[in-house]
Image (cartoon, rainbow, N blue to C red; front, side):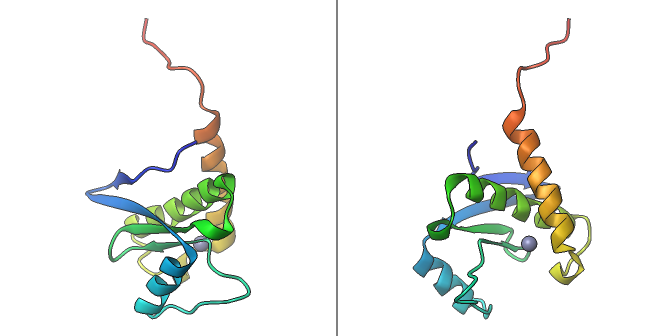
Length: 114
Ligand SMILES: [Zn+2]
């Protein structure tokens, strides 16, 4: 399953950036976000720039895909009016992202109208 460079959500185009560890740290520093050395973030969803960041050095491809869909769920909630990520329930976001990733990765066949 691939991770897109961008996608459309409402009237906005969201971009996806996959960063190495040092790039991710720099981004976190530049945007005044805390860096937990023992538990570095896997991804980040920035509603101000409409960019999803994925932290590639600590993730397998499968985990990166799941992190992508987790962050997409945050983007969806932002687009539905939950403008602060403090409003987002991480457990629900994670569960929905996981199920969405499963749907996207198991879709088969194109249904044709007859
Ligand atoms: Zn989250």
